[in-house]
Figure 1 (cartoon, rainbow, N blue to C red):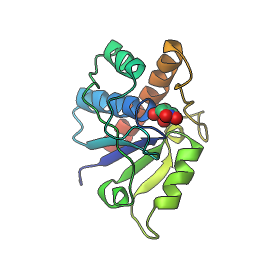
Figure 2: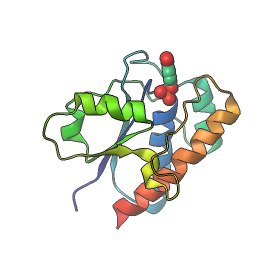
Figure 3: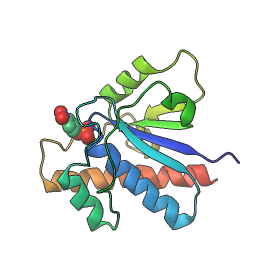
Figure 4: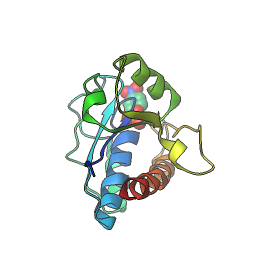
Length: 154
Ligand code: 4NP
């Protein structure tokens, strides 16, 4: 089996997609799935920056240290590097479609499409929210990460 490679994409790459990357890493490690994983933002606002402190604290509560993650912007070449590209919301998905090469082999979709009953939904941006909103984000991305790891492990 080819090693799966997964890219999670939000707007700033400092709140939602780093949490999705963290949840996926934790779950892949738990079941022993060997996968490449990364996250990116559609915007360049936070390139080179660590995740939001609230995201760092939230991941730490669940045993994942994301303080070393650094923001980067999604690029067209990601469509050749990753087998699965998951957008956190519809706007991120539309932005990814705009930069996608005309022809590519990656699966591009909404992250919550992986969660039964949540198809077509967005992971809400917790940027203007509080610690509780980051917890909600963690639970949403964790559900999707569990589903994706199980799917890739089949
Ligand atoms: P993220 O959250 O897309 O989940 O990383 C945001 C982070 C920063 C901004 C917006 C959303 N911003 O406008 O700087």
